[in-house]
Each structure stands twice: as C-alpha cells, then as structure tokens.
Length: 244
Image (cartoon, rainbow, N blue to C red; front, side, top):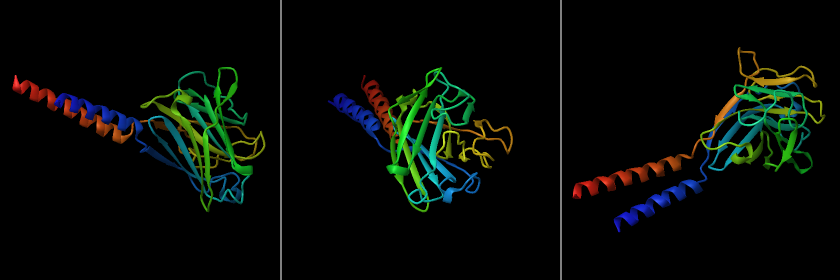
C-alpha cells in the first residue's frame, strides 16, 4: 500500500510539473533614447521579457510610447538556434536586418504590427528561402508604455527545455526597405538612414551591436516536485533496507 501511495505521489508530481504555468523569465533592457526615429516613443525599445513554460516561448516587448496613437511602427524578433539551416543575410520580411550569432545565422523570424487591429507572422529559413508558418499568439497592451506579446511553441523553433537561443528585437517602419530603427541588444543608435543594413552580432566593444541569449529552463515547480519525488524514493528504499 505504501509503495502504491508513493507511486501515486510521484506520478502526481510529474503531472503537476508538466501542467504548471509558472513562467521562468529574464528581462533584457535597452537605452530609452537611442532610436533613429522615436515615433512618439513607440519605436523606442525599453525592454523585452523572454519567458517559457514547458511548451511555449514568450517575448514581451515594451516600448516607450502609446501604440494606440502612433501605430505605424513594426515590431520584429530574429532568432538563431544553431539547429538547422540559417542565414547571415536577410530575414523573413526581406528587411536589411541580419544576424550573426555564436551558433550561426538567423533561422527564425517574427514580424508584427499594431495598426488595423494588429497581427503577427512567423517564418523559418529552409536553406534557400524563408517559409511562412503558423502565426505566433499575439496581443497588445497599449498605454504610455505599450507591450507587444508574441508566443510560440518551443517545437516551432526546434528547441527543447535546457536549449539556448540567441535573439534580438527590433522596431522598424512600414516600408520593405526599412531597417532597424532601434535594436534591443544595442545600447547606442542602430542606424543613421532608413535603408542602412543592420546586423545583430556578438559585442566586441562598447559600441558594437550586440546580441542576447536565453535558455529555456524547466519551471521551478517542476524541479521542486521532482526533488520531492526523488527524496521520497530514497526514503522508501532506505526503510526497506532497514527492515531486511
């Protein structure tokens, strides 16, 4: 009976850990005054919170203006996983924005907009072209500082828990030739002309562009429950040995 009860507790721990919704998160900040064009603050990236559950990855981008009143800015995320084909030239929208991470080029891209109700798109690099996929979950919270949320399954970018990605976030304009008005990983002005090519890459000096990394770790509750389960097993085994 005790063995059955222990098995039930351990199974419950695994189930609870798998279904837990508590997010692991990390906040990345940027200078509030480094955008090429401020656009009422909506092009000024303030920060991005990156978080994950056991199944999803979420990007929450905070900008310094109200997207309900200045809504023409586009909000973009480039990702390099080091798994599968990638490119150091271009992205899913064909903008002059590139990525060169420690594990290779960009292989996933999310582009979003807030005008006309807002929406988002998702692209992956096939080795020869960018291919559209299932759009990420998308939401906007407008205000004096607005937040743009993009959520994708971990499986959509081919990663699992404990895998690390490299990424950067950008604001841009409405034209296909518009570059990164602002870049999250760059503390200084990213471009000085609309069509200037911008590349996110490893920082080699204080003025270098920069790129960020994030590791999708299991939820703390999962760790705690698995630890309790392991302790329970150890205690049960010790009691059995003592009775022999």
